[in-house]
Length: 268
Image (cartoon, rainbow, N blue to C red; front, side, top):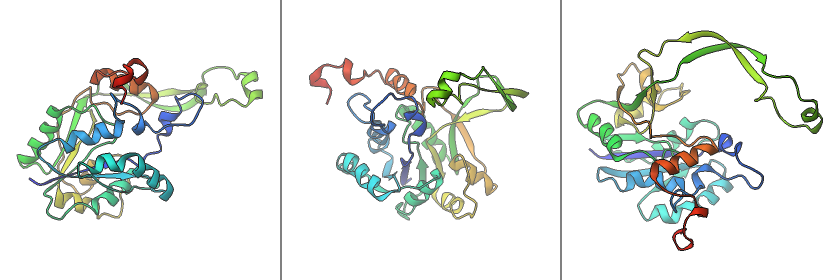
């Protein structure tokens, strides 16, 4: 197999920045994870994998933001042969589509991995790759849903309005909202899907040639073609850093400490 890996990294980190304090907002991909940025940790999962031939990272769409992105990451990642391109403005699939244009025609398989999943184990990556090598054209990792699932409907107030907060103009809308349960959804047969997701190259290109690319993951586009997607066992530790609290979890999984807790000589 000749494998190309696409890593979309054009997200705004909006939900991550909501949990930050005062000061300049930081991208979650620039946060320190054992002396290296989150993005570098993620990319290294594949640049160090013997079976991977090409890695393409899709950065911000804005020209100025993309130049800043390259200034922070291009030199280091370029040493490992990583290519970069501008990502999408609004949707993840735009970033993947742009990166797909840089995938060589010689590639037999294309994998897509979230830039904010730096804790993916080698065993999980190998499970996905091995299933593809066994002839499955679309392979994704997944874990069984453990929490109770409920579909909600009507929105109601969770607490009385705080007049002081209103005067100060504080946004308390999220904390004051609640919803009425419409029904409990059975967990039977439900799985939470992760990345990397791997596809036979020709199938993946057909999926991205469709007019309707609206989707929450790449496998959904393949499903829309009527093709079968196979789920292999994922890993509960394969978290996606979405909110600020997730960074501490990622550090715990990888066994690394934040910069302030490391020896000065080991911070870089």
